[in-house]
Length: 473
Image (cartoon, rainbow, N blue to C red; front, side, top):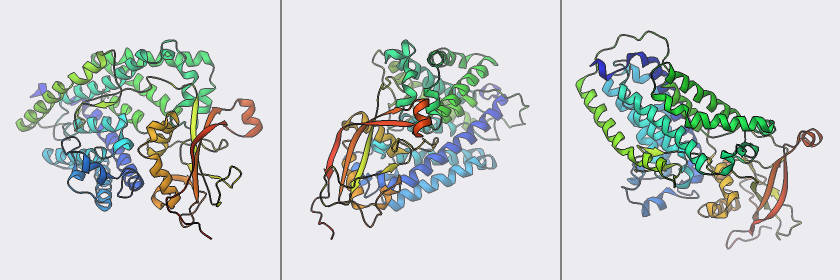
């Protein structure tokens, strides 16, 4: 069945599969190290409470059947182990059917995590990892050449990622149309990286060029993905270059990296394909049936892209098989940050000894330079950015965060860069204040050594203590 496979893409498949396995590994590692404080039995949004009110059909997965922190940890670390095995190429050492089952394991485990992750897992790259991971199940291994229809579906996902993001920008904030969004974006993005300060201070004409190039890459180049080679490879290379530019300018978890991995599946590497057997009939039937299902489900994102009321990052089915994507339909002009502080003083006066909690990625101390964390995902730091936009975003979990800080909860403190209070001596009161942050100028940086300048705006949460707490002597 020569029509079914494309042997010239054997190296493209190999690079794609190893890259995807690496991203799976990072995703499971993130889950294993952060889940107890976020969604564990004593987390801010506990899984047991979520599954009590959510039917299996809406959020299918293992944790609907049974949950304990130990079981979740076992699944997350098992996901790490399987991802590492796939990264090492174990699927190529197995029969075709066994390789398919091995790729199915991380997809099922991560689906179970995402479907109980609630707001902590409500990011577009979670669904993107699941959608791409599901397609990877049917790409095959060294026994057969890559199926043409699966390669096409990978391009279809990449097209929707880029084209959907381009449309949401053109329909959204006017600054994308007048090419001024990057005058603000590098400063106001959720989690700046170590080079974001320098990107912000690029000349404004270069910012205009950046935006214009982004429009070309997201609205024109995706159409070339379906052109013959080498045009499709050139289109993929342009997308990769754009994504690497974004990697340098910010911290967007694994969004940029999974887009790069998708683009690599399009590249036709000039290497001779190895000898492979013909695809067995059962494999052909399974791949064609799954492909037909995914193409049928694609009408949801197509309708969304064509709609004037286009939405970003939405799943249309509980298995996250076909989703819609997009980012930054609007860009903030001003950066606000929620600064959380605690005091051991018995009376929470303004002149009390208030000490600031330091988060790992989000801006805090104006003199502390941002670090590179992506593709690792700091979930609490990202949600703190949303909390600064509006208290409504923080409603379900911020009170629980404050409570855990007042308790000196060790799992919560591990999510932070530094706590001013040890777990066995937590603060009596915790408060939160809202500040406006802006990048310093070159002159201010030289004079003060600070990359940020912040100005107090208002109280975000008044001094709070645990109900029924007894003052320590």
